[in-house]
Length: 423
Image (cartoon, rainbow, N blue to C red):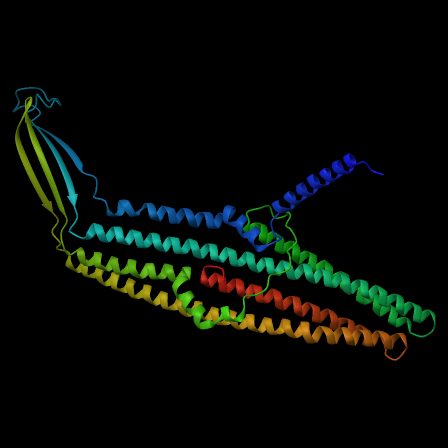
């Protein structure tokens, strides 16, 4: 009998070993979609570049509305003092020295418009960054669902392969007893070879999918990934109502948000183009130094004369056309997004019905038909081809069920991409 101390030490070692294994497993993403998304948000370079571009756009707001830097100018007048001395650069020895400080001042409202345009451009960059993340998240969610499908497909294929091995043994026993033809054994072996070939193709497809997932995670292509768990249930049909989702898409879709910001920015640029009809000013003040003291002050006002009216009219027409183009792009994006929403909702409904049909009808019927065919074959009432067909129907029913689940989640990932958020 073990002592309590030995039992306690063994339990402690087991606890440490189990916790270490759990921690190591948690470090490998892929078991859940959430683990993939967390890793991608932190490491995906495409999303990082979009975030940095959005931050750069935010930093452009303050300079856009600021006054230009003032200018300082020094003029040394009469370097030889009417020929009385050699040329010099000393302010106290020349005829006079002018120190001019000038400031450019745009026409009223131009600075505000430029700042507002920069703010809208920053909003558009934020929308594009959100759109980039929504696209990356959708690709990861779809890849996770595809990985789940491949894993289950491989598992089903291996189970069918084991079943075919048992059927081969039954055929061999019947052939040895003179109750079946050798062709039955050969067909069972051919079917096993085909299943092994399917496993090779599935393994290759799984490796390629893992490489794509690791690319999105900014990991080496052959980095390990955990096997996906069972896909969670889909949202209830009430949450997939088209009218409610259409309203949410119009208000939250990152692409539409960026297009709306582009429309507002184009409107501000049009206002700025019309403001160019009015001149900008340059104000300056100039103290004039004679010898060692300032004895004169000059004041300067300068403004440009907007004579190139045809050029300005062209700029105004350009801004009008750009505004119309921005509105057309917004309408085209809205049409595309809403069409994709309707398409994916229909796809989810079809996948849901297919999965229900496979689970409740197709699979039970296929299993019943196989069991009946197996019993009939053992009694010599049906041929081996009928048994194989019944086995293939079981595999088809199980694959249809898993494919429908995966398809539904891929469609859901697309809807969440359109929404810019999870349902």
